[in-house]
Image 1 (cartoon, rainbow, N blue to C red):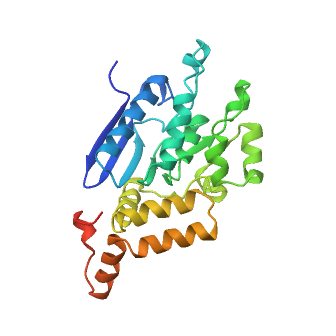
Image 2 (image 1 turned 90 degrees about the vertical axis):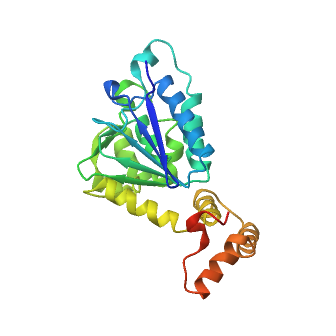
Length: 246
């Protein structure tokens, strides 16, 4: 069997594609291993943005139930994938043009930005097969309040993209997912690399005022901060656009 996840890197953007259409990109051990290998490659390439996309027909159907029913229940690789996408310095954008179910929602929710087609549906189907959305609750609850999750969690009902946006589960609903993702990539690449990485940390964690003061002062006195302020004063583009400032 070939790779179930592909990666292409260009101009600071690593595009990672879930490519197991036969089982709707279910989270098999091989797919997860290939996903980790792709994330390793993105980090080696010093990607400044990671786009997580998929082949049709689905973004991700959740756990590979055939594999699970055979006795393979170790979720370590899935947990590590969720943690990695949250802690890697590059922002991760999910580009979703197909339905998402169960564990697939957790994978999607672990991304920093989530762009979905308005026709997409979602469902936490775990209760309908006698389990619970345990692992994925960590990234999902970081995005959503429990009250808006209660109905979908407890019933397994399907819900649409506008409701997902209202819940906070996704960040963008777009008729043209690829176009919106490209615009977001351009916006991220326009920022300083260290500034973007630190801003992701701000969004992801709780900090004391002392921590925030330390971060702010370190960034203002960094090479990147000095270059950004000089570029602003001189009315020019900052040099990190060509990769010269780290």
